Image (cartoon, rainbow over all chains, first blue to last red; front, side):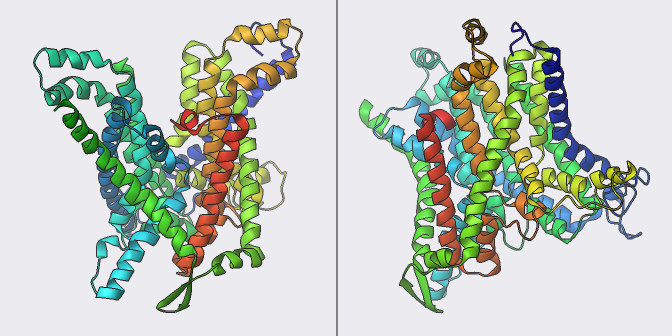
Length: 285
Length: 286
């Protein structure tokens, strides 16, 4: 199976065929989604009726509403962006603090707390959403019933979605930033201290710049994860639906090429973000 | 002085962590557990009881879906491992130079799209008016439209697709670190393909296999989109029932009980996987 071990021609051929099939399997759903975003037909299916940009640009006058004129989808896009912004801010900030806590300090019970930190990764997303819904929305209900006081922030809506997503994205951000901090040579910081820097100055001029690439990576990842999350979000969303939930609701009613247009748009944006992270990583080495 | 300063910084760093883990993870889950044991007697009185759990065991619809979801998730995980292993082996041990990086990247690209987009792509391919159906008819292999969506096979195709990344990456990472001489030594000592695979390669790749399997199993068990959109009327998924209880029926007590059961199932399976393979959560996840 390794190059130096003799194999039969037949085995090689089968292996190659398998690999080709695999990559076709991998590419096909995305490819068809992208292609049908430009099909001049009411449905994303064959036959091909020619190329059109209607699913992006049509203004509704001919019975077609493209993505850029579809207020429902644009609003959902905006809601998702706001959520992703707050989630990124919260989870990356927490991730930085956690990374320093677990990589640089020694304290009793650290091992146990580290395991607690990993916990959100092994809880299904739906359950994370449900538990937050039960606790916070339930508390709001109780408060309203007992004291007639409305705690609207804890009703399903943006705050709860942000809280639900921060719960597990923080763990991922911690792992990304912690991995980089582990490779940092503490002597660099000590050198800064010896040269007269205060701990705070040393942190901001030596350690933080070292961490920046991983923080940037964590930001890109957190933003993408938040934007694409469905399982946790769907349990916590109120009247302002984020994009994934809006798309899901549309998809249940039936599909139109507008959904393909949104899908392609999403792929392009996340592809771009991923490229930026990769380039950053490469430039860094 | 020094120790009080370091104690202060410890607490400064520990506080955000504790707030996060207590307020967003521990307390909500405790409350979910508590609510699952509450029985609504009238609109404003509650009592403690096991009614929700009794419902689960007496209503065959609940526990059948539960078992079905568990079994199908296990099967999906196993299938994902089978599909991913040869690809990971090729990338880690046979591809060289640029092609290695390109193939690895090709495995990652589909996951820049969200689960919803991937599932949607599969729907365009598999449904009655979809691409496969059109191609079959064009080739003359089918007389009319063929519905390939809304059955268990479709669900599994979609779930395996969703899990691949989380299997390929850890497998490539562990296989990359394996010394090829080990494999050659295995053959030199007279082992066949099967023996070398069983005695040398699999034990070496075990950490990657376990971490891949745990993540894929977890994601599959907790997935909602793919089974709901690609499954038919008979292919219910457990998360769908939780969703129905909470959002459609507003029966939070029952929903919480089902949620606790799903959490117990996933925790037990993850724990079993770690125990049986002798791995630790820290090694696998962190």
